[in-house]
View 1 (cartoon, rainbow, N blue to C red):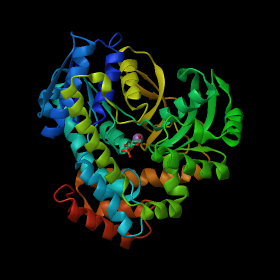
View 2: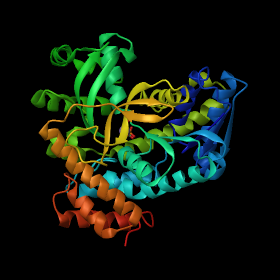
View 3: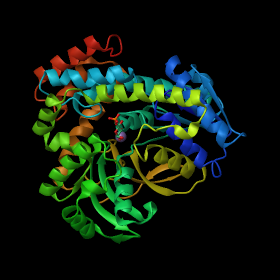
View 4: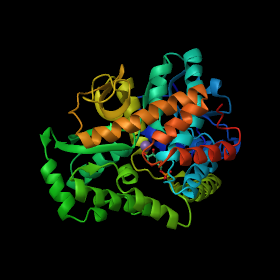
Length: 431
Ligand code: G6P
Ligand code: MN
């Protein structure tokens, strides 16, 4: 059984491989094919991954290629973690809006819009390759913007696909760990879009324990319970707590950009570096660390990119599909009546049953009007962005960006859009 990883040169790959090794008793893969367009990163990452796999199990092996069709052909699963334009593209996505007094974030606001314009056409090409060369294969996608990618795959392709994000599972596992209970015993009534959602109720072994969780959030020092003390996690949690204090609903950390817009912007403007630049440095350091580990020939030393549950979500979903487990995960699906009040055809992020038929939405309670309003506007912005990206339409792109709640006017939308087209040379093509 072959598994392809598109974007295999990512610093996340060794963690993912470790996850895939852990589930080998239930998903008996024999080959992992790493594909990337960046020859240098692929070389470094495949060297460490080859060692990790070789030490763990001699019956499995790693192959590499720069050719996407070669990677996809014969694969049962295609795992996708591409970043079109690389981290340099992310830095531009985040920096340009700041010049115009608008939030600069990789997946939210103009940054996510620019990322979508670059990414969606490529995701469609990947899907076409799967349709042609491995039509029975499952695509499990992490590439952002994950919600818009899900919409493209569902509406414009025939492939079997699931598009995921590690934010909901991060909250689920965090709450389970804070209570000292097994992860799977905690279930969430979450509703929203990707990177825009609310954890409305929490269940433990089927019992609604929301009041208990609220008391815990209010009375305990949540910051001391965090799985990681890195600055990003701490800052995000502080902002989420500020929102919680006012709304009494646990927010996705990404809601800070919509609820605390001015403050988030001010913080970004005061930072010495954008997040993209910080991550560039992290990646550089990790790649040289991987090379050192290979050189020292001791894979026990390797450090991961972080994102505690990143790999686990991916491999759990893979196994739930492969073994027809029907486990529950919060993923991105098209709304076909599952979210009351929400536009049909919008891509929503909600609890789903995942089995060999894919992700099937579970019924969710209607979002309150404040949630629904924001979801509807952002879903309309996303739908129009998808059209703009796939049709290459400048007019639709401009109207989409203007619709984004973080963009103040058509004039600013135009300035940002034009700056993106100019600086992402050749990567955003609109007419
Ligand atoms: C979370 C999100 C991902 C996003 C990542 C960025 O995990 O769910 O979609 O890509 O954060 O993290 P970074 O460390 O690159 O800023
Ligand atoms: Mn995500």
